[in-house]
Amino acid sequence: MPNRPTVFLTGPLPPECMQRLADSTNFQVNSLGRDLTKSELIEAVRQVDALICFLTDKVDADVLSANPNLKVVANYAVGFNNIDVATATERKIAVTNTPDVLTDTTADMACALIFSVARRVVEGDRLVRSRRWNGWAPLQLLGTDIMGATIGIIGTGRIGRAVAERAKAFRMNVVYWNRTRLDPETESKLGIRYCELGELLGESDFVSLHLAYSNETHHLINAARLSQMKPSAYLINTARGAVVDEKALVKALTQKTIAGAGLDVFEHEPALEPELYEMDNVVITPHLGSATTATRTMMGDMVIENCLVACAGNRPPNLVNTSVF
Image (cartoon, rainbow, N blue to C red; front, side):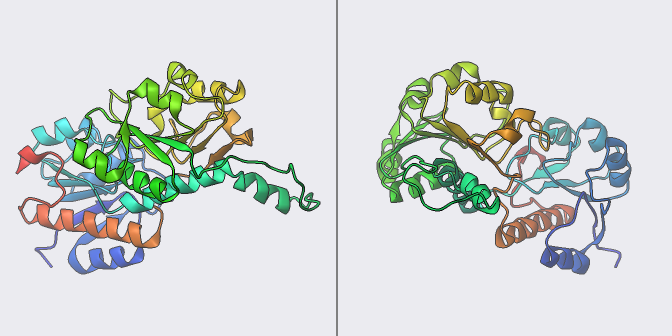
């Protein structure tokens, strides 16, 4: 069909989404089982109307300049720091993302990490599987209480607020820091209290990160910030890996500056600081924040809709660079 837009995907989407693409576009998909190199990505976008990409794909000026007819780059994520938005805007290329849809799923993941690291769930699982467990003992794998603990939420966008709502259900005291303080009505509705960042770090039993990544938030949690935390506190990160100085975190964990961490994202993923693999006081998961079938399918539907609308010459619903339309 001549009016179908041509689309390139840097990796496959859930089956329902692939069927929708087959019904409405002419598409090609990277089937190599790995991320494309820069030269491969440049070649892939030369003749298409739309690019659907992931956070792991670096869509820089060279990629964006490879095709003067590229209409839209649809990122399969909320964040879009992997895309040179300024260059895309200069070239009148729409950049879109997938906000809202993964809020609850990611908030659930943050809570899963809190429970896992505080109650030593992964350690217990390994102990039982090793066949070295000799039965119940009064001092075995003692953890940390969650009920009544204080959680400090850094970043109170949609996901941070969703974590606050969940924390209140467990009777946690919730404090927060955000670059822009919430209005009193919202604070009251959520039952949360504003703190300066240093105060929050000093008060909290759990520190949960929910910030977008930018130059301003790069290594926001560094050696100095980690030293402000309680020795009994845990750091939880489901935001972006580079918000945390991973080398400083390893040092803080080794020296018992903090008690532990729950990490779903990493500074140089899929690579980790080697010491993290061996630490029992760290729960590490492979960037699973949005990883449910329903959420990933909704994200796919959203990127496809963004592509179809933009390729038809209309303003896509989740436009990042609003000046393009």
